[in-house]
Image (cartoon, rainbow, N blue to C red; front, side, top):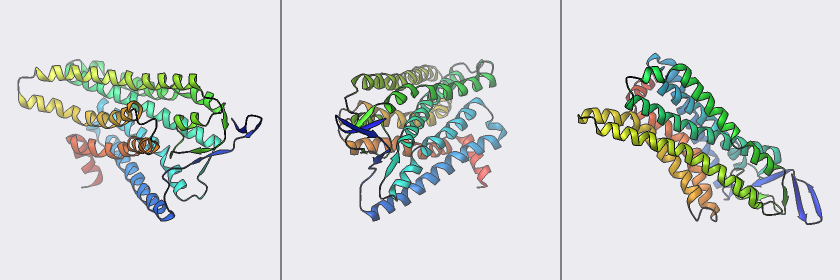
Length: 311
């Protein structure tokens, strides 16, 4: 937690400068208005999903309980970045405190980790519903659903605290400028006095496991679903089975597509502009789009939302 300007002098770091999206003052105000609108739409969309599930008794099933929890997660996920981003648009200094930076770092990645686990158990739920329909009510009980939800939150929030605490104890040299709109490990590690190769490797391993273990579970679940659906004799039956998975597959594709571009693209390590745009998509774009996908593609949810909103 030190910042050094020379090898022999150091002082306690008080904060970092988040560059965000550099542009003239008028552009900053326009971005503030745009992201304020997107933030309000995201909160409204995800809150509507939660209220519809709570209000409609027919949606008190594991599938929709998981969806409501996922929407609750998305509200906090976008809240971990956007309010600070909005404040930065109107700030002349664009400074974030040392503790504020690492708190954002922790909550952003913990909520993202929890989201990965939620997507995996939602795929598992669809596997049980389609491949084991007769046993589904006895397997996916309310107790199991609750245990899965709690496990997602606990695992998500225990995945990254150790490396984040270690990074927060490192010494930082020279510039305090982070060329990003949030506190991200790449730019933070680039500011350390000595290259933290071990920490970079450890972070890469943790991130890879977090991405690929849930993704593998999702792919296996849907491979088994696809095999089961292709055995259904009627075209109508196949369409109905695919329709129950379509929304979730769309969300998985959007989230994992953008995250994998971020972490697997060879240019993402070098181009800060691309890094910011991709991070913006999966941290702000997908929480905004998800309620639209679930609301439009799922007939039961669409009907419940229409009744709840009085449409």
